[in-house]
Amino acid sequence: MGGQVIEFSNVGLRYGHGPEILRDLTFRIEPGSFHFLTGPSGSGKTSLLRLLLLSLKPTRGKLSLFGKDVSALDQDSLLQMRRHIGIVFQDFRLLEHLTTFENVALPLRVLGQPESEYRGNVTELLEWVGLGERMDALPALLSGGEKQRAAIARAVIGRPDILLADEPTGNVDPDLSLRLVRLFAELNKMGTTILLATHELPLLENFPFPRMLLDNGQVVLRG
Amino acid sequence: MVELRLPRLRMASTRPRSAPIVPERSVAGRTLVLLIAIMTFLSGVTLGGVVLVQKSAIAWSSDVGREVTIQIRPVEGEVMESNLRTAVALAEATPGVTATRALTLEESEALLEPWLGAGVDLSAIEIPRLVVVELGDPADADIPKLERDLAAVKGATLDTHAAWRQQLNVMAGTIVVSGLLVLSLIVVATVLAIIFATRGTMASNREIVDVLHFIGASNSFIAGEFQGRFLSIGFRGGVFGGIAAVAFFAAVGLTAGNMVPNEASAQLGILFGRFALGIDGIIGIAAVVPVIAALTAITSRLTVRRFLTQTS
Image (cartoon, rainbow over the protein chains, first blue to last red):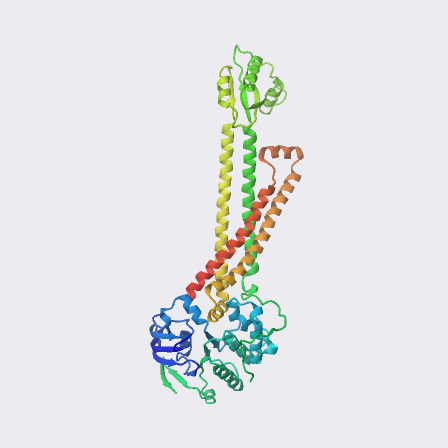
């Protein structure tokens, strides 16, 4: 997919008839970049990520992904575009009845790939994120850090162009948080555009990536 | 940190087959299997009942239709035996008639016994006499000709049992239509139950649906995953219910055979047919199983698609 990866032009978002959660967002994210998205709780970080994940559409303004206006896309095109976007949540969202391997392989499975085709890649990726020995474990038996690494592996197994992360370090200790963000940085080095939402400001001091501060529904600082 | 090389394929050790995306336990499985088994059983029993009634009605109607009766009432100045012979001769000359037999006086008196009681001396009075006429193919028999010819015999009337057959056909038709109506209601009730079960399943599996959505699964894929679960449940429930329905008819047939004495059973068999489904009845019930399974799968798929359209 070509063009600007992410472009917001005066984007606004409201739920139903409520107040605007996001207002006049105008910014652009270049391919292969890494941005932190920060802001206090309730500032709209998750809503912004949901817009990027295409599970919401802007109520006004224009949001373009890969050079295409998402409001003009039909369901099929949205689905195809969503497959170029990976997402990692604070609460991991792993399926509890599937093993680590099966959870990570899920995006390939829904594309109809047979296991014989993806087995090697999933195994290698799990080893890369340090879960080589935990492939057959169910999520209930994984630690918070292991769960998050499995969630990251699931998000990148389909080799997305954009990787979104919503408070991915929210449920792990500071040391592991640092290691997880380094993992994102490694993925960014391989060309994936990353937008990582977090409110842990001390964590950001360890990385040189630009920050977008979202406050009261608006981007008020970009450094 | 190790460099990531995604394109390189490396075969891992043999792994067990991947678990289903929609876990079996997350669907109200056992309850739904039981419910579908009950619905299939009811459908099977209704269908079997309809088949039994229809088969008996056809057999009875066919038997009755192969026979007509000439009744000769005593008429003053007429000789009964002479009229009987004439009637028999006329019947034998009619196209399509295969056999003709005049009932003897004793046989005719015996027919009155149930009404007049045994031991009544009927020699003092003249009683009507009957000629039983058997037809080969009722459609080929020239009954109007026989009716016209019998006009020459004083006191003779022809009974084709048409009123009985018509009454029987109306009764059988009513039972068949009622059975089909009940069957339709069972199907509607099954569909409604599956819709409720599917909605409940979707609500309790909302997290799985969300995960599948954000990793790029299409609504069609998600619906297919749930449909697979429901197809399996529908098939299992259908098989249990179908087997139970066939077993029910076998048990009732066996019990009826044991409870009624052999002679009475034979007479009942002649009157109402045997209480046996036959191969066509069993095939009918067996056909209910895939129909119920398909109905379950299609209903759940449509319900899931509707749910996904509403929620996405």
